[in-house]
Length: 420
Image 1 (cartoon, rainbow, N blue to C red):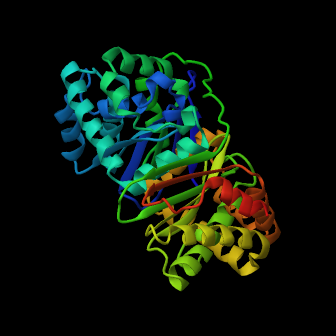
Image 2: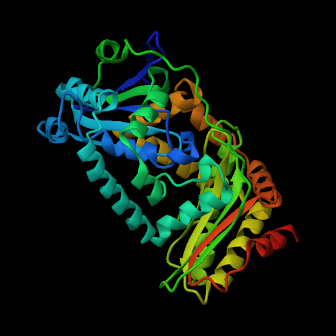
Image 3: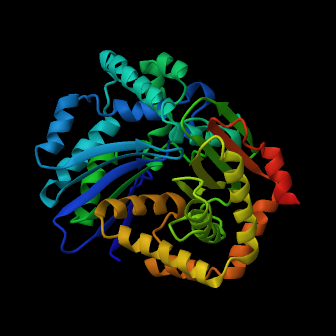
């Protein structure tokens, strides 16, 4: 693996991976500022700022930003998560310098034009409305809120509409001043890239910035709870979450294997038992998500209002059963799925650039693939059983439901069933 890492004197990190044979590259800037870095009055501003980055800089108009990349056949985009904001592009090899110039421009030189702020405010309010009209989206926001109540990690990334309506130019500039420092950024590139050339360009673009010092978000504490919204929809949307390890915890691999075996694919227990044998739902899955200091194993299913109680009971039964009798074959299948997903993703320069940035953010280095695969292979059936047992006996759970859910069990009843 031809990964190279360089850190400028101000803390700005550059990580690259050359992929011989490719004629294109993916590159971007990952900023360690997401939803959990916001104060309550700032909720939604990291996402608003991501939108505004494309609305004009001191060097380019919004149209010129789009044209600069699309004129050479590339694409440019961004996203905001709870722990970071990313601005990235995919271009041909010859256009890597252009892409880096454009991305650095939108990160460092946004003008926050007042008219554009109002236009984008309307766009974001429409986005919030769209999520509210999408039950299998909004129910996960509610689950997050139930798991981490009154905490930054529990708040919506988009923010509430009333906050978005109130953000000013000074609010946007203030958040940039707090968080968009060189030691809070990672430049990641993969594909047809020259590490030394990218370092040279990064030094010219970012080398003169002043570091902010180490910024840590407020720690998260999984409290758990229930949120239930009754509405006459076609489907009842059921989500259940249990606290699991953060991504630096060695047991994260056992968590991911347990979630995969439980509900990670068509051969998983939940899919086979709940959908294939009982026909209680169309969609059902389990997944293990992680943050710096906490995580969640989450289960989701959509079913009819008349069947939601049966579905919830059966789902909990399968969780309990998996903790007791998961087999070596199931663990082996889940390990194979994890490794295949990791290795298949590495065929894409965009996925590689994302992986590089995330590993630098988490570990300060990029582990060798063999190291990661060895950690996955080291998880035993006993480890997975122990993890599952600890998960369901911890007493820490959250639940969110939306739709015709009058007959769904209460969270306390589910916890009592698990503890019995």
